[in-house]
Image (cartoon, rainbow, N blue to C red; front, side, top):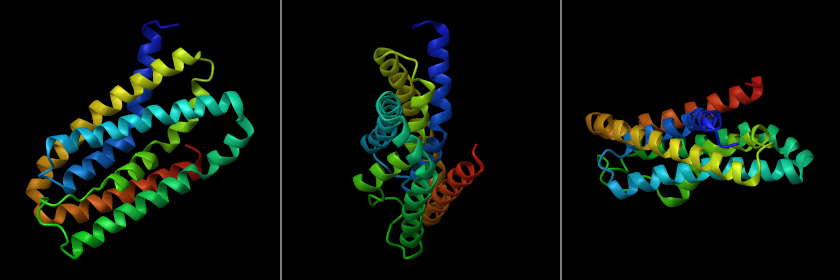
Length: 195
């Protein structure tokens, strides 16, 4: 089972799933250009954790409660949209009211980061269907590969966002919040249109 195709498919799946987390990481970097290294790793690690957790939850649901999950899956785009819009709106509000000072204050607390992690990975629940034929060990290995790919991509996005954010100064928080809202809109539209 653990052949080259398995690892390639898991890595490609990880890259596809990580695009929302990548974009949100970019936004976080923009909003907080002086972010410390530890927080950078915490953000990337949080996204990686949720991107691994959600497919495993989906895999478990497929093997235990398929009908209940299929009903919930229709709500996923709306939940992600609501969470990202709320966080993005708060960032825009804080940026306009000048509650941040050029990235020196911590813009992203643990609660908001957790909500971002859930919002950007909730669609990965449906990956449980894609990996439902895997054994429990296969599902765990696939989830770890997805997590590693997400971690690397999010670190890269945070680095780029911090570099750009340092040049945008105080406008970065507003810009980052707008990006979060746009990501939420994109998830909603894709969910409604069935992409």
